[in-house]
Amino acid sequence: MSDQRVEKLASILVKHSVAVKKGDTVLIGASTELAKPLVLAVYKEVMKAGGHPLTAIGFEETGNLFYEHASEAQIAQFPKIKMYEAKNVDCVINIRASANKKSLSNVEPKLIAGRSKVLRPISEEIVNNKRWVICNFPTNGLAQEADMSLEEYESFVYGATNVNWAAVEKKEMKLKKALDVANEARIIGKDTDLRIGIKGRKAIACFGERNMPDGEVFLSPLEDSAEGRIYYEMPAIYQGREVLGIRLEFKAGKVVFASAEKNEPFLITMLDTDKGARFLGELGIGCNYGIKRFTKDILFDEKIGGTVHLAVGRSYEEAGGKNVSAIHWDMIKDLREGGALLLDGKAVQKNGRFLPF
Image (cartoon, rainbow, N blue to C red; front, side, top):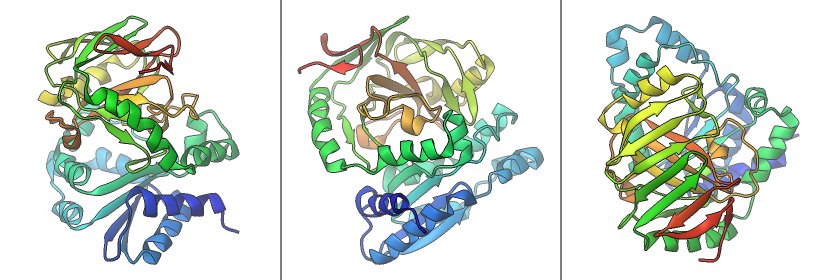
């Protein structure tokens, strides 16, 4: 018997997130075959909407095989067919269903960074020009990473995704309006005092159109504006690598000092990926108070109510961002114990809770 929660999520993804219209070509991507139930449910919903579904199902093992055997020429090879596909679809629904989130942990970081540079034009084509959404399908691997049983994780996921997103939008628009007229955001917390220029940058309220689950308001900061320091209590995870205790210092927008308590060499390597990797591409404010615990999954963790996240690397053109990079690495700052978020010197949030503004 089919899981009605899966059917409901598929309906939300197709009708709300990417709003499939008659005649749309929709790419349904899945990281592994474990996503089959959701892939099929989404496929059916696209057909019902009059769209034309395409599927791209991956195998987790191919990543390791590629990096184990790839020559320099293969690392540098640009997949023209994938770019053709990206340019000619209308919507992309990307489903993550990992069996092992650490499958690439032992791969040389420089190889991953090099391949990311090659593939960047494809991801930028989708991110900047297409209707797209990314979501999780519950697997044992994701549940284990979140320290939950599969049943607990299923309830966690569907409890965060299958909600009234129109109501979420209404609440987030108030914060968006405050950010839109502000000149500067200031983040204060443990070992943290960071000022970020946001004048003229328009915030984007997120209510299930790009991420599922959702629940954040974000913008792309002025590229040369970040001044100060920040410490991240929560692990920062990228390409399957977990980096703990990150400290960054910014001057004129650039990371001029970086350290970590665990996996510092990986952090430095990623920051040296390209010229844009040491500048901020995003400031996001978590607004989903239904997500309370850290799960080692940025799709959920960046939405935790009472947190902010800053991404080094690629910014979003739709938010006025101009920073270009092969990476976009979100790092989460917890403000729920002694932290604060200020706009033009006025506190709009203290200890993780919003104040009247």
